[in-house]
Length: 252
Image (cartoon, rainbow, N blue to C red; front, side, top):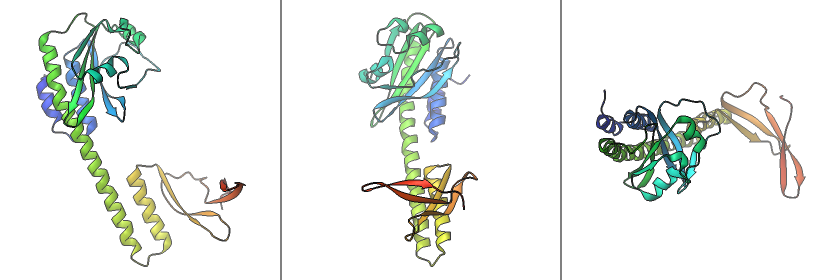
């Protein structure tokens, strides 16, 4: 079986955030075969659940997937910035989902902050159905996993951000180059639609032109999965001072 440290090293070789989280969660869950592991990433000022491994014994609905810093056991780990152990977490007053922990038979919680070079990247939570404090080897292994996981998360995010900037620059260059040639407006509209849908990851993009004489917005191009009954013309109708409301006409 792949060891925890081997999995920790593997997380540093991937630039896909999903791969990093899957490997880290699986490595942590391997240390508690009677439990499960969850990973929350810091997104803005919230800790958002992004990774999981292990098995649940019941189906659950309506569970919280994000926490503020300092909220719940997970948020407290983020504040402390140190490995934390909680015995019988369902009975702890800081717990935000005690019924979930009771139904799953969770008897112990270990929280590990994922501290990267530029600050906190997230929190690894390990939930065990075995009572009592985990043995020193398990705690050491979880602590060893934290640093490479945090660095891999940070690298994956930086890579994703650089890829977005690269795609943006390429799309802008493509449209700018097209505008320097005497292209048909329809061709330019299609070029814009194709580039925007790739940049934003949207399902549909429609480019409209404004007809000065009528004030109508008339579609020129679309990309993606535009519905068949999508309107090709919209008109603006005065609603109140300084505002207009869009109204959809029949397809024509």
